[in-house]
Amino acid sequence: MAASTSQHALISIKPAAPAASFSCGKRAGNARFVSATGCCPGSRKFGLVCAANSQSSVIEPVHLPSSPESGSTPKKSGESALILIRHGESLWNEKNLFTGCVDVPLTPKGVNEAIEAGKRICNIPVDVIYTSSLIRAQMTAMLAMMQHRRKKVPIIVHSESERAHQWSQVYSEETKKQSIPVVTAWQLNERMYGELQGLNKQETADRFGKDQVHEWRRSYDIPPPNGESLEMCAERAVSYFKDQIVPQLVAGKHVMIAAHGNSLRSIIMHLDKLTSQEVISLELSTGIPMLYIFKEGKFIRRGSPAGPSEAGVYAYTKKLAQYRQKLDGM
Ligand SMILES: O=C(O)[C@H](O)COP(=O)(O)O
Image 1: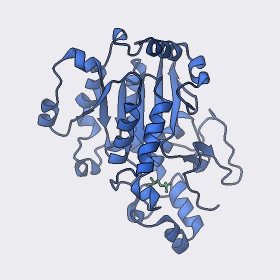
Image 2: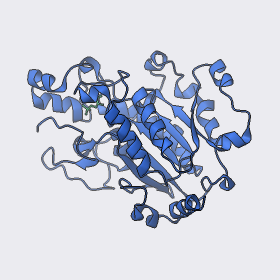
Image 3: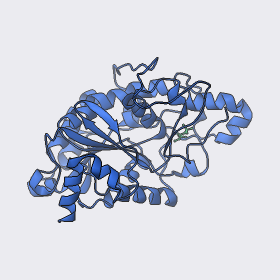
Image 4: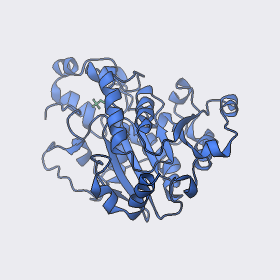
């Protein structure tokens, strides 16, 4: 199997390994997730506190935005929207370099992708945004939200120190209603690509063989040299999703996650119950939003909203259609 690029498909399941068939909602086979048991040393590196210590920064955003009167989102509606978006093209995507946890910004094309992604989701409610601690995901989230018709202001929640937290408080309830908290979490970072970080993907394939490089890039449990496998990435990303993000959805909050090819692959693997064989073929394009509806404890995949007026998304759920009508009336 040739090393595949992840640039051309929204969320495509390619015919990869023999007998790997994809069916949405199929039970997981040998996919397994282990809860993170401690703080990643990387949390210090990124200047962020670990999940266990950052409860307030994650929980607090629930109080920040909106009430139904503010044109925001219905509470306890029994369903919530979950938007996943891989960051737009980065400078190292453009150069075809392994990036991992190296913190590089978007290219102009990536900026455009983020803006276009924002247009696709501009009618879908968002109450809280989660991004990784990396600038390419944060830029994508911000640029996308600039397109939203509700025109709320995304505000990064700073939790790196008590002072940063205190000094970024907002003292107007009205202003808070017009804001969307943006929670940054290292757990959503791209998989750490180890000694491949900074290497050219094509040159690496030429040197080590394309099968070896494909195994490093797409297998579930084989890590690149001194890096994280998808399984290791899932241990932190899926644990964070379950511990911090699912409670928001359960509380009726609509959530957007801007993250990375592999941290999102691990979350999608969990949501769609893909097996470790099936996930090999899962590819995510840069800057394409994907919508899930969380209802009665289940995640229903709705694909990618094709545009701001895509009928299917709004026809599918009454609540989204009502939200859209409200925006039309504003
Ligand atoms: O970290 C990277 O290089 C990319 O964001 C993802 O790379 P991959 O498609 O090789 O996993």
